[in-house]
Length: 82
Image 1 (cartoon, rainbow, N blue to C red):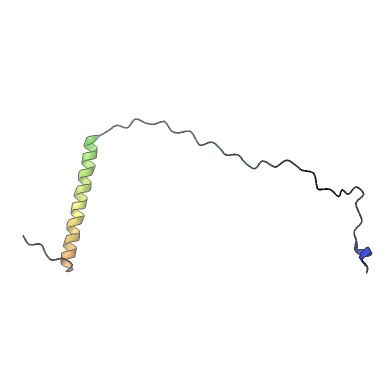
Image 2: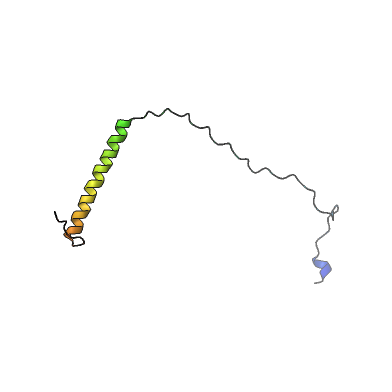
């Protein structure tokens, strides 16, 4: 088997130059952000804010007293003198 026997047949119109340039394919474009929701006028409720602050303060006070009781019970703290 020689080299000439294994060569494929040549094309009748084969070009030796580089292939022609094709325009690039568009992949995607950025979509614009969705429109913003209209703002609803916020109604200030000072009584509600005070109530929420009071509830948070009360819950933190209860948690603090519970932590003090646990700390005293297991000997991490000495009982406060009155």
